[in-house]
Length: 433
Image (cartoon, rainbow, N blue to C red; front, side, top):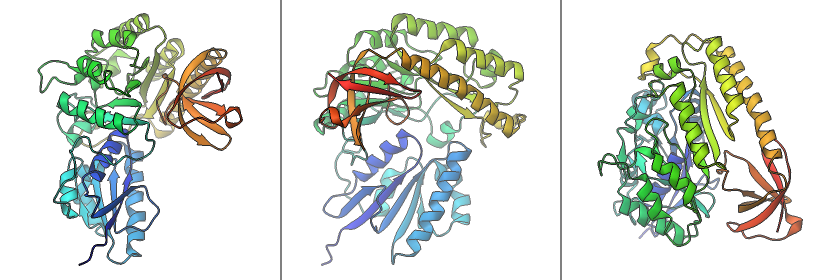
């Protein structure tokens, strides 16, 4: 009897939500029959690409990855290539015609179908929590809901991922407890909109009770919130961030723009005045909060005056973290019907202008942190430095704290206290206490 294990390599593109999907998929394969790796360079029998199809650049990266892997799979006898995720959810018929070398295409929510296609008829463990992890072992993303009921004019997520669907609280607590027992110290809560959690299954917002329950799990030291929505932002959530010591003083609140007319066109259900009121309320209640936001430049109808308003908004609000996207017209969205009237070179210039302003703000804010004592989570050893983060920094997208390896040896995943001794635009340099 042939007992050779099937080797599977999962390549994940796009956001942290895709990362969770890939980890959940990997956990479905019984370990006595399969060897599952993430982003492996080792030879494999099956390559699964979990694609992103959100904006133009992401779609291009996904297509290029599929083409490269299709060529690589040709060189291995009987190897198979599977494509899943957002890109194939949106464009499966086109992809099947254009890239027929792929053995099978699946959508964004077809994890069980992928596992069954590869023969994993006995799904191992619980679907939501027994994940085969990728990357760092001391922090993990916890996806508390799928899909979105919002109707932002530029966003394709609702018709890619479907309507909002909350994961029951008991399943999330069980998943978080499992992760904590595996060494996870930081939970990063993710969803299309965290604040909407619970409305579909409990008929009320239940994010605050969920966070309170998660904070009681032994081993969990930090809980970080990513992807909240400004309209209807719960005041009790602001108070929770201020009072619960396990909740990081950090908020990720994509605002997209500040001009009321554009916000109305974007279907954001909030105007300039309400946006400023919300920012002020959060900062008054949590004075030391790290504020991350995301903006779109080049949206249809963004005049020079509207861009100046956005530019001054960035200058005066002095966000701790800020990302910018150029507008991408996406089929199926409400904004796709609008004239995409901003030339690409203007969009790029506007992006660069905002990021230049933000870079200077980041440098100034980092200079203010010199001399302060911070608790940091040690992420990795890289060359001559340990790379760590404060509670004000999310992995992969925010500032890092560099600690010279000559000052001591530190366990990856440990929390230590440091003094900030120097800073540049996006990094802090510290010595341990």
